[in-house]
Image (cartoon, rainbow, N blue to C red; front, side, top):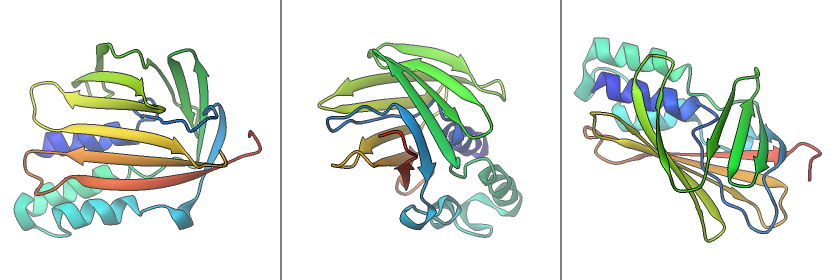
Length: 179
């Protein structure tokens, strides 16, 4: 279970494993994290798994807490869409490219775990789903532009076999002079 949560947290932090929705404008440009309008990632995860011991035990809880350091929202996202291909670069320069054509692909994470990723655009929405190979659970993310196209709203949903309910984290990004 710890490996599943760690993988899920690692993937949630990765900029290329995201999903987007559009409401008339495109997502291209630079987006700056709006902390005041966003959920606190650490708080949301602690609500779901408990702060100490709990269902996962003290040592597991410590490892999960350490993994949380990698899940905080990036300060900026730069999104470049060309057709169904998205490249998302987060602050620090780490970039991921993926296709939102409905096909699935297997990738290796930085810790060597295999993950199946599929992305689709439907009804003005781009959705990416990640499933760790050989484990239960998944991560779904959606990104939606506000009506005026000045805010990018990101919703991350993490599901796991040992979670009583999904972890849902909402993040808001403001346009950084790109709209």
